[in-house]
Amino acid sequence: MFYYIYAIFHAPTYRARYAEFLKIDFPRVPLTSSLELFRSLATLGGELVGLHLLESPALARHITTYTGPAAPTVEKVSYAGGAVWLDKAQTAGFRGVPEPVWNFHIGGYQVCEKWLKDRKGRTLSAEEIEHYQRVGVALNETIRVMGEIDAVIEAHGGWPIR
View (cartoon, rainbow, N blue to C red):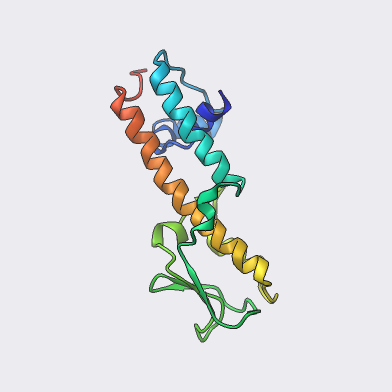
């Protein structure tokens, strides 16, 4: 049940459809009488949970490559040409960051930018570089799964008319 709810709350059409309501009240869970739809959404919700807990095997397949010194200092975070840069000279950073991943927001924060800005002036360890790359994969996969959730709902007749 948790995975089903998790999928519903990550459906872009749910967020758009109930945006005004979500500003003033707790989210409501639309239930389905279709066991097939429930199972499909629960499967996608489970996939999202694995990604968000950084436990999914998909996280091992990085979508970015780190370039620069082994222990870079976060100086000035910027995004240009599909790369997230850590310094003004743009010599250290993560190449291959898709724009939707860079622009992805959670709770009003741009995830990729905030994580690095919170470390401004610090030297990143190899573990932190690896973590940032895993977060990039998690966000990229989240975007993909969110689209799949909407497609599954649409394939089963869309949202109820109320």
